[in-house]
Length: 541
Image (cartoon, rainbow, N blue to C red; front, top):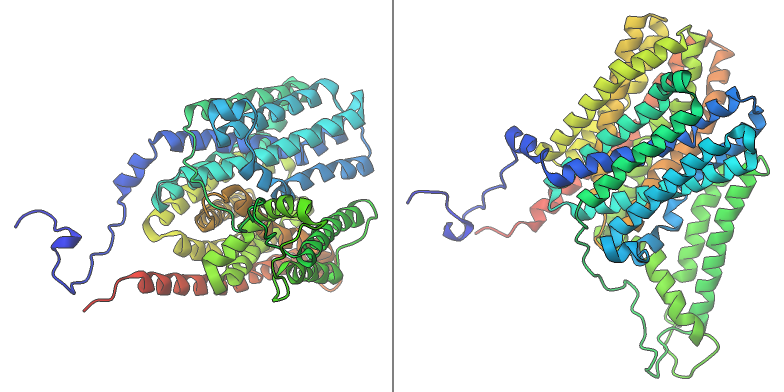
């Protein structure tokens, strides 16, 4: 018999052939797919506003004579990117009027967010910091909110549009490539552009480039999101049984108020009261979710009741809110079982070395005598090439080796960036050495970024994609944002007993060592994935 035998042709008890890994030619053919090109443009659209409402905006403000205190206040608009999980349930459940009907659920939200981003950037350009700082800040806040919303929808579309894990790897790599190019444009090249045509024209130019994302929306096809039932079963309002007791409803309301109050307290305390981050905040961040879980869990006393009570008008909307906001997290734990906590811990620690080191990079360049012109030139050339290579190799690795193995490789490659900075500190302000360090740094970040995005994307459940991915991305960012505020104090402390350059070097080595727990967790994830795959195989005779 000639040809390849199918599974049904195999003899009873024969071992099933392993699925064929895609070859390099298959990978290159995949890059020509329509959805991959659309993803590249959508990644560009997602990255364009990020720096324009962050570091680049701060430079424009400073050049315009705005005080550092005001610049610090305006940096709060970036909190939108960390809080996007709060409105992600709305994105999952609610259709955009008109646009949602014409383009579909995901693409309707995409186009609306892109239009608002473009309007916000043009408004900032027309008003300028000197034309009215409050109005300028308000438009920056609008642009940041719309940009974070766009991130939610694009992440959901990317995950839902992938036919399999291989295609998800391609889409994740294409997204990272477009996003990193946008960051390069708005963080480095825009300085050259603004020097020639001014900040106003530069912002208007970037607002115009948002049109590429709008073209991608029309070029792309709507994702195939399946309809899923609610995690929380809603009782029939026509039935005599309410389904939830008054006590349960009251506890859920208390839990809701506790959650909202906790988030509001953290925002106000650290942004308006100038409260410093300390270990009390970590205890607060752990204790509040535990309290909410204790309040929302069902107990034997939560028996159904038959008579209508004051709580009947509250039950239906509360259950619907609970399903939209808490349901995605419950489904995540239901899908991944006991491994869910370790998965979340691995995600939280994965990029910690990069986050903690980040605030000290630019001061380090200045203190060892590297000119900002050199920094910009190397970032825009060597850095961009290295980032692109890291993204491409990570995408190919995910296709050939899988998401979990690529994640483990990224856990090794990522801290190499920190060690490269330590080597540069001891080597000195040599352009060639700086270029080598930037090549290692950008390659590491590009690879680790794709590895993490691809892995987090593979964890989400269709139907709750936007909310679950927003929650996962918040998990990976929040610990780093907490600890990076201590980076300056760490370097200053080391500088008391060491030369400043040695203090930097020791700090960078220390931040690399922070990556060891994430590496150990990734090794465990690899073993867990292998055990899960083996358990899924049918028993052989």
